[in-house]
Amino acid sequence: MSAGPRSAAAFRIVLCATDLSADADEAVRQADALARAHGSKLLVFHALPHAMPSAPLFPGVAGGAAEQFVGLERQVLRILSERVAVLTGRVNDEVELVLGSGGGSAHSAIIEQAERASADLVVVGGAGASGAARKVLGAVAERVVRYAHCPVWVARRGAGDGPVVVGTDYSKSAAPAVELADALARDAGVALKLVHALGIEGMVSPASVPATAPAFPVWTREDVDKLRAAARGRAEALLAQCQVQGTVEINDAKPAEALVAVAEWEKARVICVGTAGHTGIKRIVLGSVAEDVVRRAKCPVLVARPRA
Image 1 (cartoon, rainbow, N blue to C red):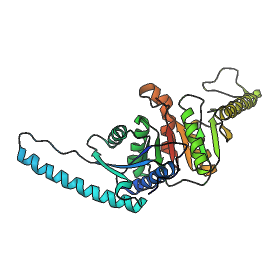
Image 2 (spheres, rainbow, N blue to C red; image 1 turned 45 degrees about the vertical axis):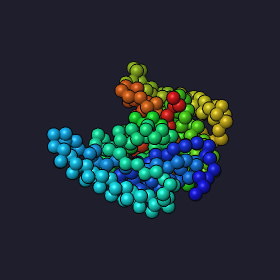
Image 3 (cartoon, rainbow, N blue to C red; image 1 turned 180 degrees about the vertical axis):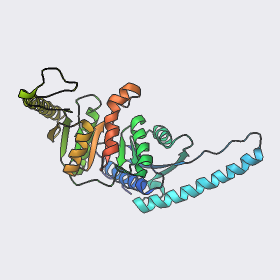
Image 4 (tube, rainbow, N blue to C red; image 1 turned 135 degrees about the vertical axis):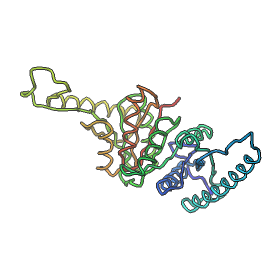
C-alpha cells in the first residue's frame, strides 16, 4: 500500500496506545488517518496488565507461569491484530503491533514505548468531558500529555468540519502549537483560528472603581479595549512573522475555557495547544492549561512541545 503524500507536519512514526476499549478504538481510527495523511509508520501499542512473574526459588512454578504468559501474549496479539484490521484495514506489514508491560502504570508504559520507538506523535484515547470512563482514560491521557517527549494527540469523537483552533500566549511553548496547527490546517484544506485569552477576572466602569485596591484585578472598559487591541495586534504580527494564514480571536476568558468555548462554537476539527512539559512548579503554571484543555474538550486535542 502506498504511504501517500508527505504531510507538512512530518510525523515519521505515529504510536497509538490502545486498551482495546471503545474509546481506544477511536484513537486507532484517528491514528490511522493521521499516519496515512502524513505518510507515517503506524505502531499500535497495548500494555499487558502485568509482566511475567519471577520465582527464582521455584523454577517449576516460574516455568509454568512463563508458558501462561507467552500464551497470553499470543492471544492478545491475535485479538489486537484482528481489531486493528477491522478498524483500519491494515494487515501484515502495514502496521506494527507492539506489546509491553503495564505493571507500573498505563501512562508510564506508553511513554516508555514512545521513547523506545522514537515516536514523533503519540495518539491516546480520551473519554470526553465527564463520566467514569473519563476518570480512567482521561487521567491516562493527561499524564501522557504531561510527561511525553513528543506531541500527543488525544482522540475524541467530537471532531467537527470547522477550522483548526490554536491557542497562543506568545511563549516558546506556544510556538510549536502554531506551527503544527498551520500544517494540519493546510493538510486538511481548512482555516486556522488563532486564539489569545486575556484571562480578565472582572470589569467595572470607571465611575464605580473602588477607592481602595481590590483583591483581584479590576478593569475599566478603556483598559479592556486597550488590552484587546494590543493583543490583536500582537497576534496578527505573529501570524505574519510565521507566514501563517489565519484569523484572530481575542477572548476575555481564561485560556482553557476560551479554547474549548471557541472550538465548540466553531465546530473545530482539533484544538492545538502548547506545553513546556515541565514538572513541579513550572508544570503547574505552564502544563496545566494543556491538561485542562484535554480534560474539558469535546473534540480532538493536539498538544505540542518545543523542539529539543
